[in-house]
Length: 128
Image (cartoon, rainbow, N blue to C red; front, top):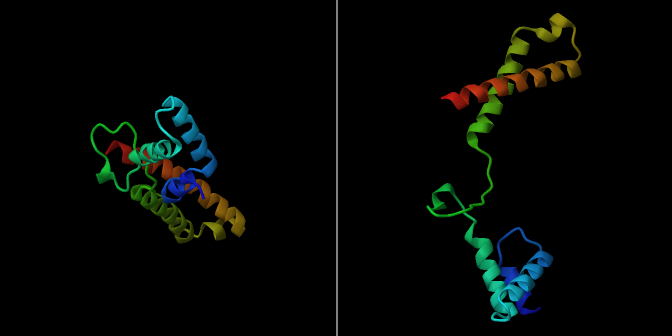
C-alpha cells in the first residue's frame, strides 16, 4: 500500500478511498506544489476530523460546523407514547369489535391516529 492508503486506513470518517484520493489531489493542486501527497493527505484527515464531535459537550464556541449522528430521546419517547396511547385506547374501547374491523384495517386506523397524535404532541411539545 502507498502512503495515501496508509493514512486513509487510520481515518475514522465516512469517506470512500476514491473521494479521499480526489481530495488529496485537489489539496496538492490548491497548495501549488508546496505540499506532497502525504502532507496533503494529513491535511485532509485534519479537515475531516476537525468538524466531528462525539457528544454535544464536545461542541465548542467558534466551530462553524459540527457533525454527529443520533436520535433524540425526546422524539423516541414521543413516538412510543403516541402509538402506545392510540393502541391502548383502540382496544380499551373495543373499536375493532364495535366496527367489525379486520386486523389490517385496525392497524391502518392505529397508524393514522398515531400520526395525528405525534403531530399534536410535537406541536404542544414545541410550545413548552
